[in-house]
Amino acid sequence: MKKILILIMVVSILTAVVTGCGNPSKENDTGYKVVATTTLVADLVKSIGGEYVNVQGLMGPGVDPHLYKASAGDVKLMQNADMVVYNGLHLEGKMGEIFENIEAGEKVVLAVTQDIDESNFIDFVSSPGSFDPHIWFDVKLWKEAAKTVAEGLKELDEEHTKDFESNLEKYLGELNKLEEYINKRIAEIPEENRVLITAHDAFNYFGNAYGFEVKGLQGISTASEAGTSDVRELAKFIVERKIKAIFVESSVPRKSIEALQEAVKAQGFEVEIGGELYSDSTGDAGTDDETYIGTFKANIDTIIDALK
Image: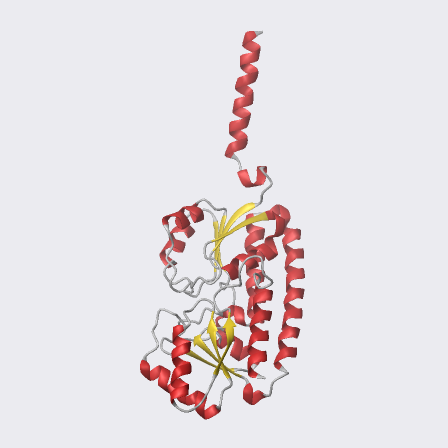
């Protein structure tokens, strides 16, 4: 009898070990572990993955991805994940080598921009062939990013392919409604007022897609600094065009735009700071702006209300 009890215990222990060596996220029904870099990318994965993914974002709201340096904890988190998703086009400029090392493993690693035709990208003026990474400001391109995420999730979890396809279809419908809202609001201001001046050049895709002239005080990456001549030239432009408002950004310090405002004042003209725009991240968790759609709506409302 004693031998039988011991045998039962051994079998039970072996069963537990085998179960534990499987996919723990699947066994515990908590979803596959997915690490996403920015809040925008994390929201996209959640929207398509739904209940079948457990998404961990590396960068919180207001964090500048251009300057972000991954910690040892971040690297470990990505190494232990089932899937890693990032923006690409060097948005996460200091993390390129990390992605390359992780891609050498067997996990699913993808950039949401990887399947978008290059003809849709905006070239750096100073470096042809290098592209502006801020594609989310053109909703049509974000739809393509959503399709890429759906394909990656289907590769990760074939069992729930139909669920991902259904979630994608629903999300694309929500993006169509977002486009309708954007165009309706833009129609409220005359074309000559459609000039957007911000802290850095994050809104060029927005300008191309929705008919705005866009100027950023800094370059595409916040790693570059605006010089005195840059401030003076942009101030002159604002005075000549009688621009009503300029905008700060959630992930960029206010000081550069405040300096621009003072430079405009020194030339005898008053320009308002029209509000804060979300550039490289969504709004705070728990607010209406924590999603991509909420963030875009907040931006368009801020822009139109200030320039009307």
